[in-house]
Length: 299
Image (cartoon, rainbow, N blue to C red; front, side, top):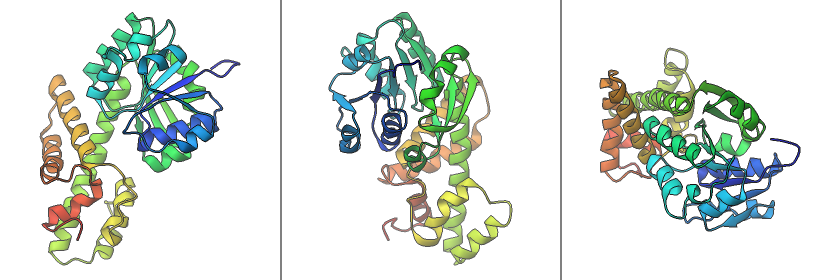
């Protein structure tokens, strides 16, 4: 982003944000300022690598050329921007806001307009893949915004992403992310329900995944859920039920807004909602299998 490293602000250092931050400071060599927050992952390694911390989102906006948001969803994005000590309170002309969160596209347009009116610039750049790829600097990014701004920010994005697609104007990234997550979470729900049925029908789980892998059920989702189906290992898909339910809610809202059919999406949403109502909010998506099979996920 120029001959001198830009100062980067990072708001949201969770499972995904930590990997992003680590690659920005280590691979990119950018000066990095983190927003101190109770929900962050441990950041000692980032501080040791040269990152600093601030208690104020407004201060981060004042200090930094680019502010990356990596928070849970639309309510958190709007809060960190619009609150009295939020990003908009400290934004200076030319500051770039990059929202990596999963958000409702109609809110994205409102947020981008507010950033522009404050003199800033905005990209929505949601990501796909998992915390493992975030740590490896191998995320996929779907970016919405002006092409010139996208190209200017691309060297920064390349620090933590392997595949970067410019999707179109502001909001395009978040629309495509919701479409992607509907397909991914829909596949996951279908596979989980099939695995639960197989369990109740006394089908050997190893045989089930072998048949799927050699037929029409092979793919990324099977690769993520296979370790859990075979051995109870959920580490391959560290995505919570609460986030799955949130994203499916966002997708069905977008479908309703556009007048698109969403009967299948609503069925998928209800599957995750049923697990959430059973107290499984923080469980990983693969752990919905024993719930659907009618047994305790812990046993």
